[in-house]
Length: 111
Length: 110
Image (cartoon, rainbow over all chains, first blue to last red; front, side, top):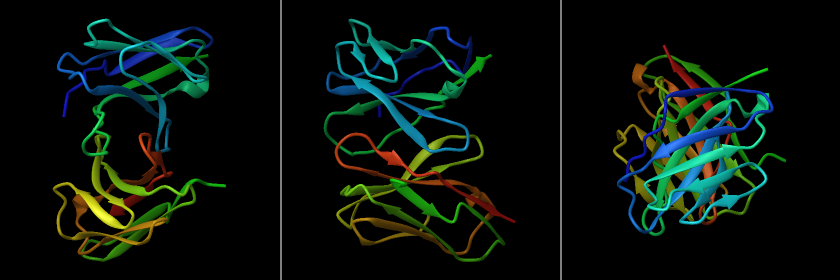
């Protein structure tokens, strides 16, 4: 399973943008980049995913480097409810349908 | 309506006991999973079932036995509980790419 590297923790202020980085230098051509988050005392939830192009949805944006060796999850206006552990996961297009979680980034939002 | 539900939410038991955790999904998904989150907060897959058939079985002790009576249910039975089994167990289901996770069952073995 391809490995990802994320900062252990980050802090931001409410209503400001947050950029969560992820390095995945060993990504293969068929790996999708997925982001999940885990709110306190809850199960993980899907946030966004992409392959090569930048992606936007109602929760966040995903910016993928041209060489695909890194990506950034962008929360445009953080709220207190965005405080969670964010996981960047590489998932092959085919193969075992499982998520391999790393340690993630614990995001703290200050009021 | 809860998409993926687990019972019980909390489970405190003595070492050596046998216990079960139940999971139900009302999403019509074909695939269900069990994940374990240990005290260091690492989430690891344990099992995956597709249409009641076991398709993923990570290196989990034989004391753990999943059972899928139908597509909507995946239960986890644990024999001879050990202290190291204390963790949060998450059930999930998917149809395609993105699993939906349940709220977790917090198991404490004393």
